[in-house]
Image (cartoon, rainbow, N blue to C red; front, side, top):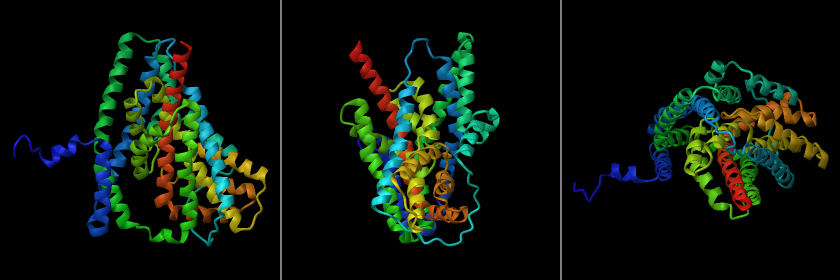
Length: 410
């Protein structure tokens, strides 16, 4: 083969990572359609990729946050506060969108007895207590169990302490951060292969036959998520940047949302978002904290899931919903969403808490959770894609917006 005619492998390597992921996606769909038995065997590839992401994410967050704070120079600007505000605003706005959509297009469920082995929290106070306990978790336990709230707390504390250490110690910490980052980049390079395995095995095993009975419910859920991703979030970003938000929105959906859709874990997508933030030229001191923080509290998709499924149960039982109750549900759903775990299906366990606002007993609420697991093939994937892509979107919007504001004042 001549030098002017590179091999197929070399040509694939020259393509962007997103293009490679799309090729893996198409190949996975094709394999599931034409050779489903072979496609089922690719589940191991997908599991290895997701496990690798979950393995590197905790240590990456711990080391990166600690190194960023330890090497932070006095007087250097960070933008955590505006990002935190955008996270909370976006989550609450998503809950409001879900309330409006569920009122305009009410869904009904066929509730029957389902044995779902889950334990739901008993109230908002229990969610908040759980969050506080996560903050003071043992650091080794936090790393082993991917408790990112605890990891953040310890990383911030250690980073502040090491700021007073010698220059050599802080340089070693910076080198360690660079080393972990290189490992993460290597894992992310295998994303196309991992997506291929996830798509092929999921379609071959589950298909979409189980979803036919819940088309209307899925339409409301996915419609709300699309509205938030393509309308509500752009409005918030435009308010922050005062310019066309869609190039940034589409980039975040394409480069973060696609991988999150198939990994179905905000925690597993943290390395992808950190890499994208770096390529966008954002402040490392900011995104090294805001991205893992967003994976734990920026849960617009979870707020939509909790609200829509709760109101589906309410409509099924014929319970009237007035405006004050709808507003209260939006607030509760937003708070519950912040307490949802960043793993597949984490938001479903908080549905009974929201149902308790309407006096719905836990036996019925757990049936709603079971419905959530049935439609989880699409619901949880779309929810995670919205959550994770919004983390980097709001981080970029806040960083760029504050930088432009500083330039105007200079």
